[in-house]
Length: 177
Image (tube, rainbow, N blue to C red; front, side, top):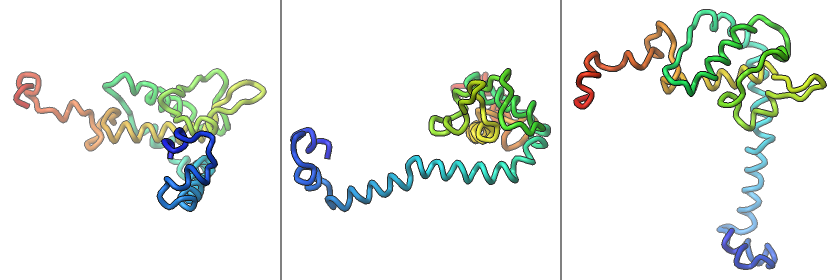
């Protein structure tokens, strides 16, 4: 399709592009419908649904979980996630909609691009961080870190320090292992 458009940039779309697309105009219409269904409106709907479920039910468990679990990482790249978890821990009992202005939560490496508009809100006082949206992003990054063992839980078995998974003689017999 791109090749046809470049070869005949002044041509009529119906004459140049439709013939080179398998299924023609109907395929392109289906692609547009799919984009609308999975594009920004879809992301907004997903965000709204997640926020609703988390904000009205699951969020009540967060303070207890954060008090019971201690997260660590052997990789400096995941320090922002651990800092963000600590921020959640400090403000777990707060009912405020936004974090205080004095708090500067880590955004890079925590909030993915499409979520930024839901997390960072422009107010008269400046940029504010919406707590519920931010917590969802932090928990998602934490989940990814736990799954890849880049972040681990002190005292856990499945989500333990990955260094404990190495054989005791690993340093001596690195080549063999």
